[in-house]
Image 1 (cartoon, helix red, strand yellow):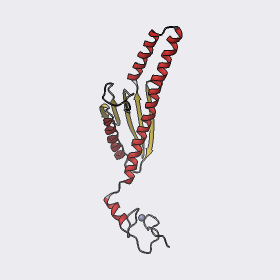
Image 2: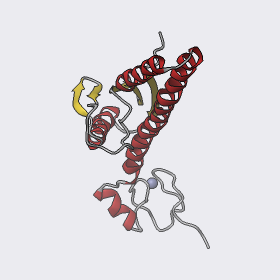
Image 3: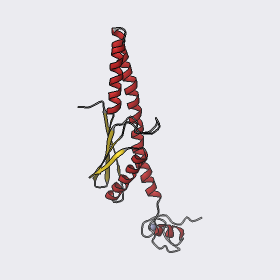
Image 4: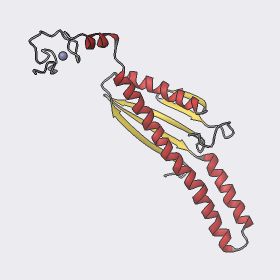
Length: 195
Ligand SMILES: [Zn+2]
């Protein structure tokens, strides 16, 4: 049964690096991002990051986890593909919305108010908060992964930096080039342009 108090989704990407290493590094990145946003009891269990969000925290209203009561992020590796499954639940705000709707039933002065107002409160308070939370959380997951992958592309090893600075070596693979080479004999990269 699809529950209105939780949201699940997944994103996947392929990597040319060792997927186990990528997974472990992303694990660390996600844990530190959740810590920054004041998630509590963050636990690592096999391929899962589990966390809770205390209702009373000293954070701004714009904190990413505000509407969330708990969640998990799960990593699954198949060959070079990594699938990131995630779930968030909205239990606290759901109970608050129910309470507000119930209070408005009691306070309603006629039958219409007793029906319409609780529904409106629920749709607006719960629906809007949860929708915004889901959008922001999806963005958070994607952005974290993208930033991690981009950082990875830009980080060169010492060895790579040396051969890129050296005109007698191929920029892509580091093979030694002959002055007559137009293409790298090793990887085929175009290395000279005749003017
Ligand atoms: Zn080359």
